[in-house]
Image (cartoon, rainbow over all chains, first blue to last red; front, side):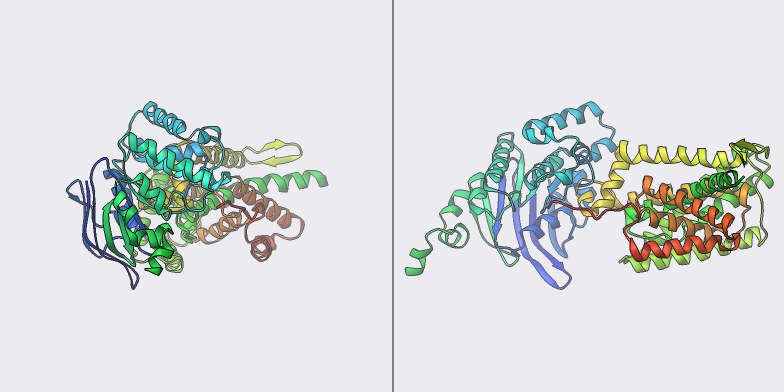
Length: 246
Length: 293
């Protein structure tokens, strides 16, 4: 469904992605794990057209989407819930969700349909329903994250990009988010998930890629990665002692 | 007697203040969607008045037909300005953009001088010159038109920004451009929209004020600055704060001109502008926002 081939991205002079290749199949959840600055967010932003690649190919359903403007990418069916939520704080929760469906309004989809989908998001995140009229900026971080995911889903994406949905959240709230992701998975949503919480991400995902300083250094089935000594040592904080002693 | 006079100053202050408010809203709409202070804003005020004049005098159109034509043409100029001068910029920095708008304003003013000459022109009032007596003060019918049209436009503006999807999208853009792009909003299109709306607002202001104060190729400079002043007092909000800023400015100006000397009329607004910029740069009604991360 999505394929990156030898993608290179620069931030000014910083070589942020070095020959990154990865792929996603329909209905799959794939996670990108790695330390801060490994390039996880850059991969999502490169796909979304925020930081266009300087070389390489990005194919979405066999169509090249290199260097399109972000709004064109959304139109093709790729939505992103960005890092740090980035909800529209001065607007109400409902307005935020409506804006998620902006392109559907532009394409003159009946309002009924869009309202129905808003109700569906409310079912997924009942807390948003309670706060529908509240300004997004007055909500807690967890609620804003739910809104960011809901907003991205409102575009009815074929592929959902999630950037650190559990960042800065209390364990319980972050668990709540992952429960919803589990529900989305059962509905067959295709997700590319960036997470620092490698354990939770690998538990949810089908496959994963491990990134280090802009390069993919390991890829495999999620359960394999979970057992991989390198991953366990560096990202799951387990068996540290054994490895050092060996 | 004294009270009548004050009422008189107050009412004419409200009318000029309404004009400043309209122009100020034009400033803040563009500022909010692009971060640019569009110093060409005043030129659309001038264009509105002079185009309406040409449509009535040269093409012999009745006023009711000339006005929409004038608004349409100046809005078109605003849209072209965005497409030709703002959008092509490769790496837009605020300072580049501000200088471009100043250049654009000089260009538009120059061309207008070639077309309309340096004379002052007057547009006929919309509905006669029979003064209306309110309390002990006399008010020109044009004053009432000005206040009425301003109120109407501000309500439309409010409805657009708060109740239509494209208005909400513009607010989203103003708040966070990147996130707006990520939900599929075409940011460049929204910038074009903001230029269209604010040049339309500017030209309406220029048309409704022209029967009262006359118009010429260079009225845009002063009116533009006054509108800028109103927007600064309002903290660059595109809502009621800027309207209040405009009214406050208009009333103070007219009181000052009446009670002290009309020679100080412009000085008063610029002193207010400086005081606001020194002491309350977030605007008179602005509060420092607290945000949750």
